[in-house]
Image (cartoon, rainbow, N blue to C red; front, side, top):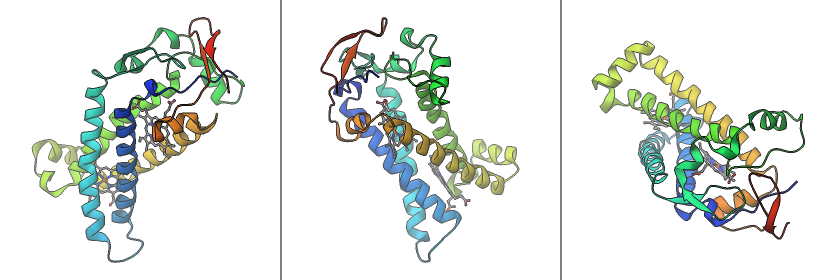
Length: 226
Ligand code: HEM
Ligand code: HEM
């Protein structure tokens, strides 16, 4: 299979940082949140709550910054190429993704050995990443609804009423944690299943050599191979 190169242009430094901040916040929130739910050792509740309150703001500010940056920062929009355009293009439907949904599904379902090559992100990868945006904001919303200082705010108060009180909101917030844990497990597996080149790039900002290909014809147009 022709593996595209993973060039720095695909994940400019600012997105390497936002991914790190997001990952660290998520791990801290899941850990402290789980502890708040089920204090599996004693004497840590103050720290756990402090951790949760700190990282919830970090997470939300980081995500909002990442979204705004998508409109200003340029990143590679073609898999395996250094050619750059505004990052938001990676998140909208792209010509190079067209007609690839079914082949990608077959690949994920082990019905097909190879997956289509095209835009920077595959169809389902794109959908899954975009889904993390509303999911994170739902997390924020449910979390703030549980947060004392916000509970009397009319927006959050009405949300609490909508779900039938704070206990139900807690259950929703807790359940959503598992949604994130499952997303992350699948994401971490799929991101590394074809080799560690994508992770080397998003975590260490290290490039890996590969093949460059024309997204339209799928033909190799350069690169060394690996
Ligand atoms: C995005 C912003 C978030 C906000 C505003 C938020 C807010 C809160 C608040 C206020 C509580 C109650 C804490 C207490 O009363 O001591 C809580 C509990 C909790 N949070 Fe978050 N949180 C957020 C994100 C997350 C994330 C990303 C996760 C996990 C991946 C998470 C997992 C939990 C869990 C498991 C609990 C305990 C729920 C229970 O008691 O069953 N939270 N959160
Ligand atoms: C064990 C933890 C993780 C690993 C190994 C990992 C790995 C990766 C890799 C390799 C990429 C680049 C994919 C590519 O270039 O094709 C990526 C991107 C991404 N990951 Fe993760 N990731 C982890 C945790 C998370 C978490 C916790 C989230 C969110 C809940 C997340 C959301 C994303 C998003 C949204 C992107 C696109 C990045 C952007 O363009 O800003 N990741 N991840």
